[in-house]
Length: 330
Image 1 (tube, rainbow, N blue to C red):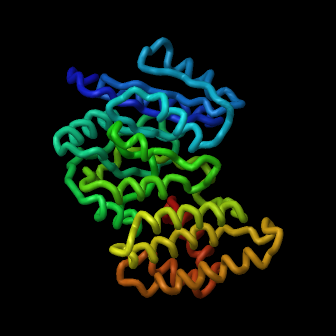
Image 2 (cartoon, rainbow, N blue to C red):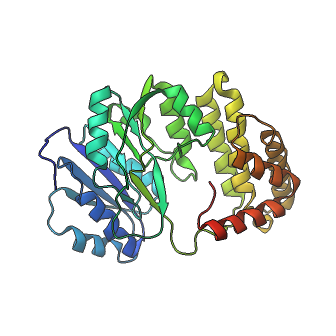
Image 3 (cartoon, rainbow, N blue to C red):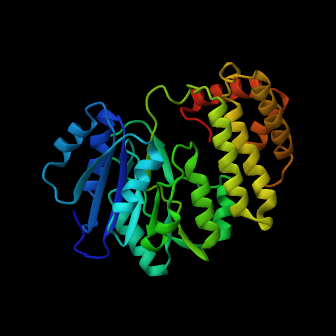
């Protein structure tokens, strides 16, 4: 049931690129929001399959939905395109193959208005493909300082650093410029925003369903020089946002992120294999340091210890855990 409350306009920006049958459940989860005053901006990032046809069938003539077409430019380009064209007092991002709980917009807007905060950050759940999604429990909200929430991002304690799963005030649009053509683009932008805010509204409620496609959990996507360069650029952006007060937390973050690329590095993808080997040595060194940090979680200390000893041992442990648990460790 749609709420009778007619509050601020909320723009939901949804980049779409060749997600096919995953698109209609995503769009349906937006149309089913209990909050009525929304606009949904579907950004067709040059789809070459039937994604847009499926969306048009799902949407019908719903006036809340606009479909914008552009040449393929990648996820950041599509987000920037939608951000520049949204009219909402608040905005949020949803990836084209994910879903959100029907109460997401309503409860996040209420929290933003109650606490007079420019950003509401929710949690997420990893799920298999679904036709719809609803949280099992309700949601409670609290205020944190921007620095404290940045600390949670650096230590991966309930903050993914992703653009999705959050409600942003329109006042933050000048800061919501995602670097185009760059992988791992969210974290640098989001960490910079956290560093500038006095307060952030946070909740551990998993409003956002991050859909993992069949076979993706145990499949390691091989990563090469571009992944290395882009992750290094993201790490540098986060370093600048963190400042000296979070220097120790940043060192953990640097180790985690470097490990996450290094564990998938394909040495054959480097023109000069020595560059790839040097990156692996750097990753093992950083992992060794992080394994001794009291700030790191038990899981990350174990992973860093294993990687410092042997990347092959770490990867075997990671793959086994994924198979047994049915999920990958972040």
